[in-house]
Image (cartoon, rainbow, N blue to C red; front, side, top):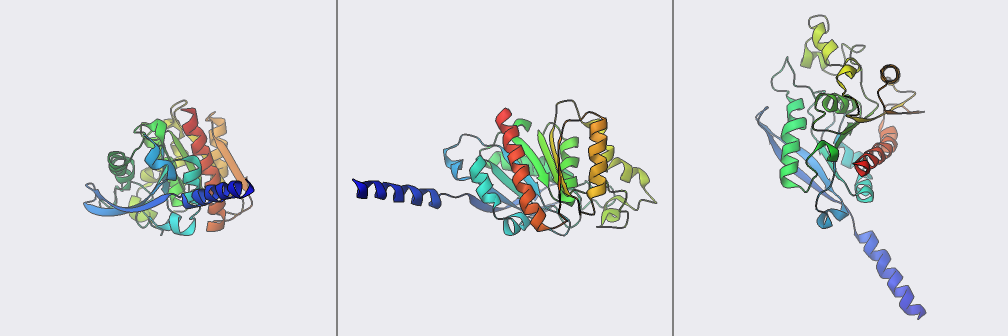
Length: 271
């Protein structure tokens, strides 16, 4: 009897260890930019048994690419298994800030991520094709991008987050290629005012978006995140706000993404 019990336990443990998420590297086409763009798609272990699963779009930062999250924070595959959700990591270009650039027609990443890629994923994977089954988050430039896209496309995304996000671009007029995408702040101030997240809060419809914001106290974006939080409190916009010691690096984001995906999981479970 003891040998039999031990054998069953060993087999059970082996089966658990063997089960794991599957990572696809896919190539999608953007009609808006007339080019192919890569993305990573993480399918959880429960994908084959599911009828439809929620999706989290996970955006990279400035100078990064579609492979950043899977190579620098590979634990996200385990989180996908834990919460039984699909994670999509698109390529956002070098310094796109996820805008449809009014200054450079070759950068149309708002259209790509919020429309073209979402449609491509919904057509090829077992997703929940509504904002009740879609969330978006990201780090740094991608934190700005996630909030920007979610606020502008509340019919597409039901939850959004930001990790160390550049949530107010105006204090940084000479940084990270933003002037290439919008024109200089001096020459086109209206573009900067219109396309910074902190000035878009009036667009958030009541009870439309579940929001989570996270930034380390030693981050150069900490001050703008504090101001965003204050404005959201003033406007009575419900959100989770997380701060803790940390700076603008992968050690911080490897930790932060755990909180973000837990938040998204809980959002999906409420739908």
